[in-house]
Image (tube, rainbow, N blue to C red; front, side, top):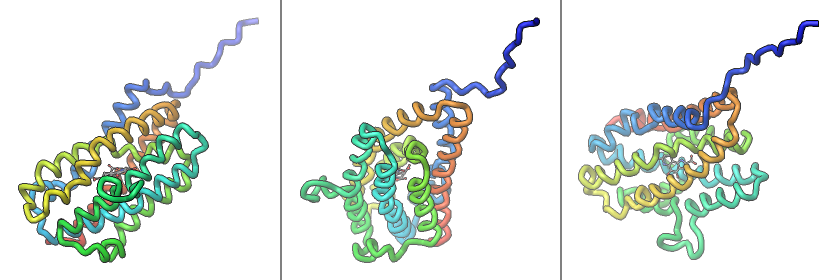
Length: 243
Ligand code: AHQ
């Protein structure tokens, strides 16, 4: 009897870890740093009304992040991952006496808003938030609430590209928007090392979990969804503040 030859697998071979990471980073081409509104914002071409509109609407994104991160914790059975992930909540909501550097990122963003001439109560009432901005941010939070926790971790990896956008703001806003007190920019300064720390963790989880080719393609789709969340926020802000 002739030997039974194994049928060669038709399953595509997964990318190596290095190739997979490179493909994730290639998605940076669609990051909102390239959105026309952001280009104008960091080139000093936005009016005070446009800058304030951006600050007030992006506040809703920051407002959503702690609840998003709490949803990751709620869905994650791995204590080691939870131990690393929970620092993100403290980064945004603050800790200890909640004063100064312990006040958290939502308060730092509020300082940015106050430095730009926005009212604290109106900011926290979310008075200025455009429907499509709310829709995009809520889509992100709802995705994280219902997706496997590893997919939620993967969706945070747009922050791979965030240090550059924060550095751009710090490098250009003082010159272009001198009417915003420099200490109002402290959120951007604080976020650069935190984003790098968070990406190191999120990328390690992602590279370890998404190992088949189908899973790797899914990870790219998840990252594209989150890029679309950020991009569509700027679409809405650009439309709401034409001048
Ligand atoms: O300030 C930002 C932040 O705290 C986070 C958390 C992270 C996530 O979990 O999705 N993403 C993110 C981002 C922040 N700032 C954005 C910006 O342009 O200032 C960038 C955004 C990101 O790249 O995902």
